Length: 514
Image (tube, rainbow, N blue to C red; front, side, top):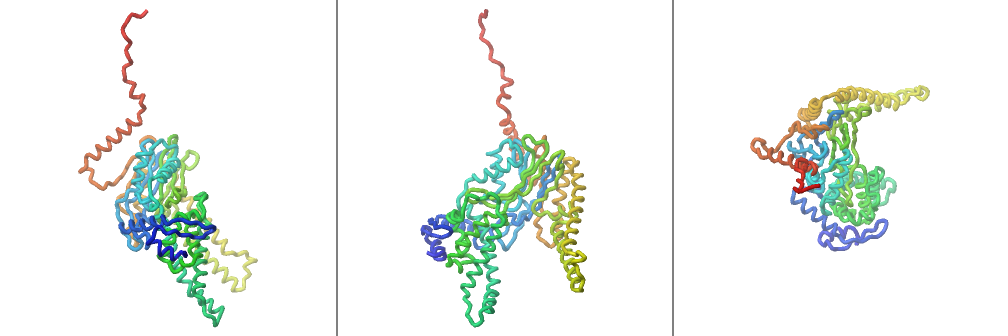
């Protein structure tokens, strides 16, 4: 049965067997197809268009501003409260999101998150609080805490539909891009064929098939050329097709249904999907996790940041984003922005990365025009050793030196900042980005109350500013509850022998002793 007929019937008959030939034949009943259909039904009930459009997500495209400041005394986290809900066409912004959390009661450590705020259908804040309650331990370092958290979310109870939903959000957009590119290039391909073979009627189906295969192959090569080291190294295309192939073809029906009767196209799309989930190119639906604080034996704070992008074959897809380890003889201070960072970059370096790219490109284009004009005027530029790339490299080196000097001047001051000043600086950086969004024509994707926390070795995780969705004065029992929890934790951590110190020793029995 060809792929198109199977895709048409599988939506009505979930138990139909399907065979797809890749490097070898395999057969599997479409249980995954049934899961995909149930996922679609569930998402439609919640107004999330996972298949027909972009998924409904919180905080997509890194629409937030967060920062971490570290010196030898403490680490400060600051984050805005804006969260963007999007269905691909319309955006809704709320200013009430929680992004900073206390990660452990046993070591001074916190966790900050950005971008998509859910994982396998569960809000990240729910996972963090459950992890803190069930798996809290004395972590050796932030990296240790990070991998314990990854192990926890990988073992968190979920269904195949939870894995499939994220896969759908990744590949559906890529399939739409392929379809758009095919429509743009098909007419040119047909025109070129007519020019090459005048008088012959073009085989549009054949031209369209070759074109779509070449576009898919190029997308596949882009992902294969940038693999995520070690991820799913023990899995093959056949393994992927057995578990997720039905879902891939279901999604392809939304934009590429006219090509699915062709077996080559069906196989190419599955290969592309497999390459996409193994690629280090992460989707807009990634989640950023920033672990910061003090490990068991740490004297100075450290930071370990990663990004995760779904879970496949039971393995969380993640990559290291950045790490900082403060040391008396090494890096003594750091300012690390996350998500929207252009205003922090301007403050640190005097220029942000986007402006720098524009400037370098301008120098490159201008110098190229100048060299071309000299050559057109008959000047032998080879003898003068004039090359436009030399000027561009000189400008790039100058910018790098100026940026480094500017950054070092600020970090020298951050190194000696007291804890209170460190929190003021962290809050100011977020406020700067928020004001920039407020006075620009762009959406106010940064805004709302700013949460600030500081982590020290002695005081632990301390809130400096924290919003609540309720009025504390109207909920006095909330403070009592927190106090009781703190006492419970303290009693739980106290060694058992400590409680026996005040016990009276057993008295000897009276009698005659010789």
